[in-house]
Structure formats: C-alpha cells, structure tokens
Image (cartoon, rainbow over all chains, first blue to last red; front, top):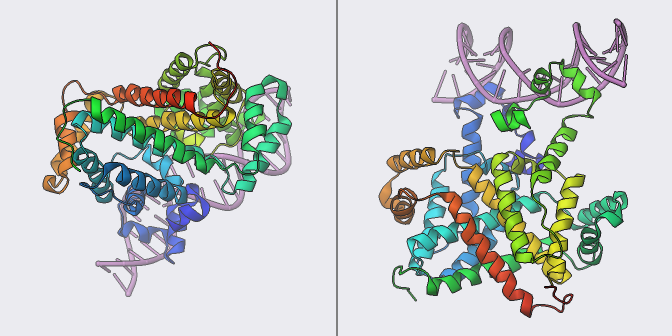
Amino acid sequence: MELADEQGLAALTMRALARRLDRKPMAVYHHVRGKEEILDGLVDMVFAQIQDPRPGREWREEMSARCHSARSVLGKHPWVIALMESRTNPGPATIKHHDAVIGTLRQGGFSVALTAHAYALIDSYLYGFAVQEAGLPGEADAVDELAEELMAALPVEQYPHFVELTVEHVLQPGYDFADEFDFGLSLILDGLDARLGTLGPGTPRKR
Amino acid sequence: MELADEQGLAALTMRALARRLDRKPMAVYHHVRGKEEILDGLVDMVFAQIQDPRPGREWREEMSARCHSARSVLGKHPWVIALMESRTNPGPATIKHHDAVIGTLRQGGFSVALTAHAYALIDSYLYGFAVQEAGLPGEADAVDELAEELMAALPVEQYPHFVELTVEHVLQPGYDFADEFDFGLSLILDGLDARLGTLGPGTPRKR
DNA sequence: ACCTGAACACCGTTCAAGT
DNA sequence: ACCTGAACACCGTTCAAGT
C-alpha cells in the first residue's frame, strides 16, 4: 500500500515489494499465493479504512458520514478504483462494510428493492466521483496549470461552452472540484428520502 | 481496441498489437510516439462513440439519451474506466462531447455553477455505475453462480443484511443489475430539475 | 517513408536448492 | 519454516541498420 500510495500502482511490483522488505523477490511467494492475492488484500485494506455506518441510527446522517469517509479514503488511495474494476473476490472488511450499509438502509425503512436501488446509486456516485478526482492532478494549482495549458492549445471558438465553464467558473479563484461532492450527495440523499415515503411497503420505519 | 475488447487491457501490448497488424513490434513506433499515445487515442475513440446531446433541445431528454448511450458504450469497453483514471490528455472527440453536454445544460437554463454541479454529478454516476458493472462477470448467469459461490463460503449469521439482499433480491429470477441504472438516473435528473427552478439566476430558460 | 534485429532494463512466476 | 539463484517467457523502448 505504501508503494502504491507513493509511486502509483505501476510501481507495485513483486520485485519492488521484496526490495522494500529487504528480501529477494522469491521470498514474497512464501507468504502470498501471487500478485492477485496482494491486490485483493489491498482492496480489502482500503474498505477497512472506511467508516461503517451504524444500522439502527438515522440513516441519512449515517450514510452521509459514510460517504464522506469513503471519499476521503478513496482520495488517499486513488489506485484502488482501477483495482475494483477487476476484483471479484471481496474480503471480510469489504463484506462487513457492505453489510453495514445495507443494514443501515433496511433499518432506516428502505424496502429490499429500494435498498438495492439506493446502494447501486450511492456507490456509483462515490466511485465515479473518485474516478474523476483521480484523473485530476493532486494539487489545486496543478489543475489550473493543466487547464490553462489545455485552453491555450484549444481552438476556442469550436468549444464555446467548454471554454465558458472553464474560464468563468473552474479557473476562478475559489473553485475546487472537491466541493462538488456535497451537492451531488445531498441531491441523491434528498431523492432517496422522497422515494422512501412513496415506494414499496418496506419494513416499518424506525426512529 | 479489438485487442482490449477481446482479451482485456492487459492483452494490449505493443508486441501483440504488432502481431495483429502483421508487423514486427518496432514498426508500431513509426506511427505512434509510444504506448501512452495509443491509450490516449483509445479513450478518445470511446468518447467518439457516445451520442452527443444537442444543445437547444429539451435538456432532460437529451441528457437521458446521452447517459443511456454512454452506459452502453462503456459496457462494451469496460477497460476504458481504468484508463480514464490516469489520462490527462483529452482528445478532440472527448472535448467535443463535453462541450455538447455543457451546452445542452446551459441552454436548458442551467447557470454556470449549476452546470458544473450537474456535470460532476451525472458523470460520476455514469463512471461509477460502469465501474460496478465492470466488476461483475459479463453474463447474468455467471453473476448468480458467483453470488452462490460467495454465499456458500460466507459465515451467513455474520452478515445478515448482505445475505438478505442477495438471497431475497439479487438472486431472484427477474433481477438484473443493469436495471438499477434507470432508477438512479431518473432520481438525479429529477433532482436537477427541482434545483433548476430554485437555484441561481441562470440564463433565461429555453423551451 | 517504412520496416527490422539485436539489445537493455524491466516484469511475474516456476523449480530446485539451500539454512 | 523461511529464504534464495537461476531460469523462462514475457514487457516497453532505444539505437543502428536495412529497403
């Protein structure tokens, strides 16, 4: 995880890992079946860092806190997104986390079907936001630099709306893409709240 | 693109590409600066396949069609998600597409700020949904198989909510994860519509 | 202009061998 | 139980050389 955080996923090779541990490459294989197992383990380690919501408490507060926690964790380990795409071997922390999320929704009054909807929606937003953030340079100044570079090379009259949004909004002093997260999260939670009243019978709503 | 579609991103090597073109590996470098340029080009080729929304038309219909188009394209080329995470060199088709999306929102009455919000939200959902879908096996039957395998190995009493959702819903005959897409998309577009009336001054609303 | 062979510095992993 | 050396079949890419 240190290797991936510091130098990206490509830098995490079995050989580099062994070097980090002051061993020869082949020693790693005595503790782990192969690289796949390491990648599966990394994903689970990341999920373990996300704050689990607590079933039984107010679902909206719990989910909001869980989403902010997840976003901050994914921001620290952006390489995990690329891994999630290919892993089909969820570890214990991953399943425990999923169970907590599902439980919080169910006990918050969501029917099974609405829970499935909500789950797919919220996690899609979470992962997708992380994908977009990962595509940006780490530092806010670097984003501006990149954008200005791009604008300079662009045939401006061909993309008027793109240019407007970039120049008049994104490149303005106070703008930070990270702030967009709250808008979308609120909209989603609002929408779920509205559908909670109208959709399906569900379990009686707690609290 | 054929190589990536058929055998995954890992199978797309410079050497395999050359083999496919009936050339020796080094011949590729005469047409392309290096592998990075190929990956940038692939991302742009995928964006070119997504149906651009048409600025000036009813924004909700346009965005809905664009999102369904994008989902189907990303479903055909799931490897592109992993690429988007690392590319910072948008190609012409990518920028043209972004411009069309932004223009459709702006001319639909969205203020610049609300456009930025909407854009981040919609695309996050799109990419995140694709990430989740990519993490599932391609065939619906295979999903069931995988889920049943997982359930068999699971300490059921430890994850009651996870088990409930899986057994009582996901493994039921009619269930298809792909159907979850419409629920989330509608919720998001509904939410944006509601905020369109209340938020910011914006340009006068067309149509 | 387009292609190639040989070479370099890397990968993940197997296998047989050490302590 | 834990580690290692040598080897195999791969990577992306440089460089000099061919037509």
